[in-house]
Length: 193
Length: 193
DNA sequence: AAAAGTTTGTACCGATAGGTACAAGATGGG
DNA sequence: CCCATCTTGTACCTATCGGTACAAACTTTT
Image 1 (spheres, rainbow over the protein chains, first blue to last red):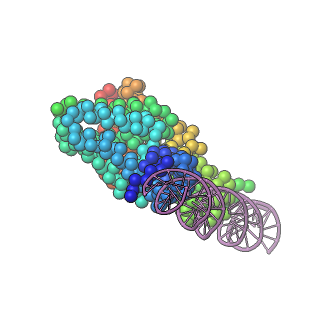
Image 2: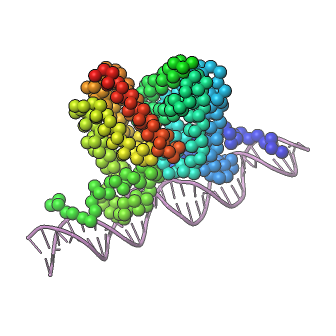
Image 3: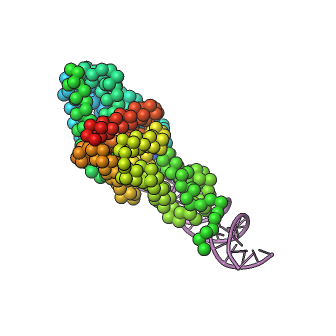
């Protein structure tokens, strides 16, 4: 009953939608831009996303969140080797954000009033990231209070590095900042573990 | 010939314009919103800013830049007491960004394509902030390479703290992060000076 | 290959976007 | 007090916005 397969389906349009939202922001991403980015006509977009732009963004956020849960959060939450997990996290994040050339769609949504409709999801994304990382540091032997502080600093620092790298048009600043954040975290666990 | 004084002039409309641009972003700030924020009709706005939204944003950026130059950059560049200057910088910045509730209009412009028209100004803002802070750290005795790295980290960290505080709807995270950045910088100069 | 269902382009909708025109009102110099 | 200048609200313009309607084209099932 449900196994209809089309040339394109909803899921496979999400990466292109995400890229368009990242590049133009929620308000700035016009239906024309979304149509061009996905290669789908308006009719198709509204067929897959009857709720319009808002449903598209919701789906994109769910998709992005899924990626982070699987690639970043779960490994931190079920960590066995904290140092390796932290290194992997920074590697994955650096690749994902293309060394800061690629905007964090979740972070940028929180900045202006257009993103208020998604504020719960935005908040939960950061809360989970920070607490997953803090858990990992605790497993590595860091005291809970320090672990939480350092996690907050690292997640926040990554967002800042994206802002700065975009502003300067320079990947290397992202890489320097992220490398230092990584060292700080590794220091905290090697000092206690 | 020039000393005509009106009920309102261009300059005094800038804070309200800035606030509207911060809240809605460049694309999201409609003329209706800008008109409401300033209390000026469309006619007045286009009288003061014939170039439309773009000229308004340009004027806002110049205004913001002026504030940062006077309050933040110049004191760092002509520093005599590095520790005091750094403390003052963090105090002023925390007040200016309202502990992260207020978005950095320069940083947010760099994030989406709407801000490309202002990319030179955005870049120069961050370059000057970082180099002014690095100079201050060097005066405090920090080695040049370290001074530059730490400055980059601090400026980037402030931007990240804004993103995180907005996303979490929580000022305290901003304050914790900024306090730690401040300690890091003060450590670097007390260790060498 | 006909039927049933999906996907898609096109045309269209009202609303609103940014911007212009301009006459009426306010202001200050002489 | 009057005139030149500046300021302002209103009306209006075109383009485009997000969204809808729907018939044509395409898949898939049978």
